[in-house]
Length: 183
Image (cartoon, rainbow, N blue to C red):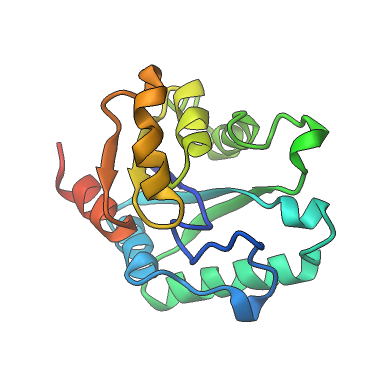
């Protein structure tokens, strides 16, 4: 079984410092939906792991978040792909939960639901250091994209020696292409 885990905001869809609060604000990044479908069609089980503290802050109604995720699923299916699962942490940082990245709780849930013993080497594509740190905590292969907050994260990579050698791509489409054609 091949797995890949994707962050959502800044990787799949446009990000906002003020939170993506409604379905109308949820806009896929160019090529992202097609990249997910390509990975799926190539035999990857594609999972999404996303922090959504706007829910815990009362800024994103749970129904709106569900509508965004239904739309994402629909768009991927229209391209002939499928999402294996969408996992989100609704907590604010002050809650100290174990599922908010950089903690690996969402990854642990994906591992359990996927029925795999470990996530070692599983690609995790994100646009922030916390995505990469969660990946490293479970032995995933962290991959950074420059979309969203990715350029700032790339500039800060040198501050995290344990993330040395992280692959960096312009966007999810380029990362997916590398996964599909790489070793």
